[in-house]
Figure 1 (cartoon, rainbow, N blue to C red):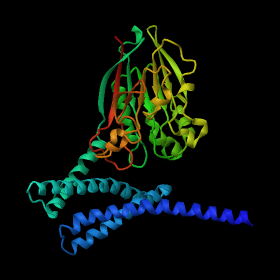
Figure 2 (spheres, helix red, strand yellow; figure 1 turned 60 degrees about the horizontal axis):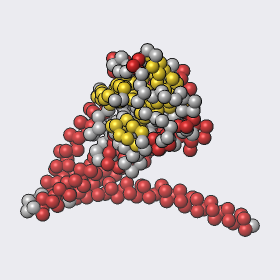
Figure 3 (tube, rainbow, N blue to C red; figure 1 turned 45 degrees about the vertical axis):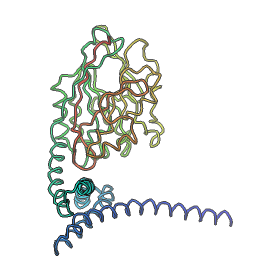
Amino acid sequence: MARRHGAKRQGGAGRGRLLLGLLLPLGVLAALHYYIGARLLSAPHVPQPWAGLGWALLALLGLSIPGGAVATRRRGSRAARAIYLVGIGWLGAFGLLLTGALLAQFGGALLSLAGVAAGARAQALAVALGVPAALVVGFATAHGRARVERLRVPMPNLGAGLAGARIVQISDIHIGPTLDRHFLRRVVEQVNALQPDLVAVTGDLVDGSVEALRDEVAPLAGLRAPLGVYFVTGNHEYYSGGAAWSDEVRRLGLTVLQNAHRVVERGGARLTVAGVTDYNAGHIDPAHESRPDLALAGAPAGVPRVLLAHQPRTAEQAQGLGVDLQLSGHTHGGQMFPFMFFVRLQQPVVRGLATLFGTRVYTSRGTGYWGPPLRLGPAPEITELTLVPAA
């Protein structure tokens, strides 16, 4: 009897934590929407009926965010897809409105200290003009052609036959609800036009199941490189079946490096190309635990080593394994201002070439986007890395 009561208490506590876990973020979301309404509708004394309509619209759009999250489970229906698209679109606009309202209030306070009047109406007008412009720029940037970033990377022990070899990296494409095969086909065409020697696809290819997206990712089979096209999983593959996506990408003709390596050769010079599963994959599928040590087990000594790893922080796991260059993504470069400033709370680097735990790591800004169809600040990229012998 005591055990039964104890189990009931534990079950009740679990339900209480679950309820709190749901209500807390919803409460924060509601409070932030109220702040936006207070700054942009009430404070500038917007007349009726426009103020009332504005509050009603704000409430409905606020509800579309959790509604869109629920709708992701039923994307097959048109209504669910419409709710999802409204919710994800509003999430981006909401972030920009919140940022704009905060910056306007802060700027107004600074101007007041300087003796310059900048009332609530002027602040609201600045946000009303600035946010739509930012939305247009962000949408166009996210859906535009990826910028090709070129850099030369000195590699110790690189043989003459591979001097000047070019690795082209794409990452974080996120084919799914708002990016389809037409976008991916354009990316593949851009990559092939660079005539790479080797192609690295560093995870987060998709947002959805193999069943739903098989036709959308088919253009990936068109990637061409004489030294091979290699793929490693990102965290998003595991949200809809990491093992299934590895099999599908393999079926498309890419080499999937699941804690494994290959040695490529040109002109008598060799290069080890290793790859690991996503940093957190083991929490979802224990068979896919990220193991840089396993990926490089048996790799030839004295041969330069390139490691493909979705998250930059994998460099900590790989220290001491002789990795000369790690190629990563995951961060999207922050994707939207001001979120790039918060990426450092999870990752040791946001974008570009850096030395982490004794290993040089290049972190791509990503080729697609995730969530709101916006990129404000960090543009999408395709990276061309030219390997040169270290001095």
